[in-house]
Length: 153
Image 1 (tube, rainbow, N blue to C red):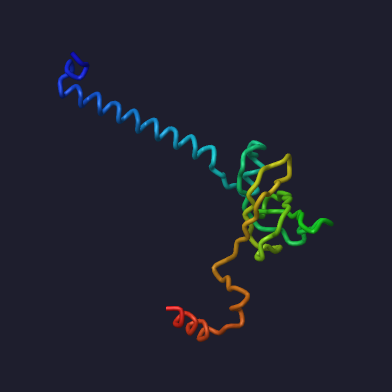
Image 2 (cartoon, rainbow, N blue to C red):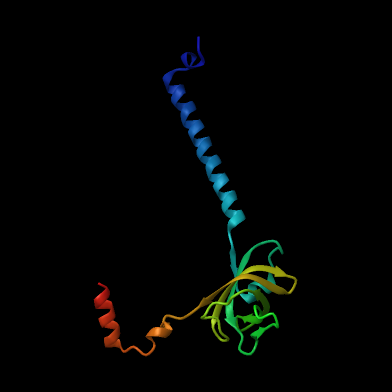
């Protein structure tokens, strides 16, 4: 006699439900573990100084680029600057091509890791406000903009 023949249909369904539930819980735990390893936490300067992350943990640092702090090194691609939230200042180093919108006094999100007291950025995301207008459209009047929108529809 097989094992299935020994169990009543009611018990067979119970075993099936328990196995399905165990599989769902296992998949959920596996997904949660994978996401926790890939998550990039967002800090402002006050938070990153008060509670620094592990040096090997990838995080995002967001704030304003302090005016007068942007310095390009002799190699032409490495920049040092200060990110501030108005309370705390965090020095940042980035090697690479900076975004066009990256200027002193503007918002920035730097992705990277803390290396001692300095943040080492792998990527910079320049932020702009809702009043942002592309360079090409700055001289355009409102009626010109409406004509462009009408032509694209």
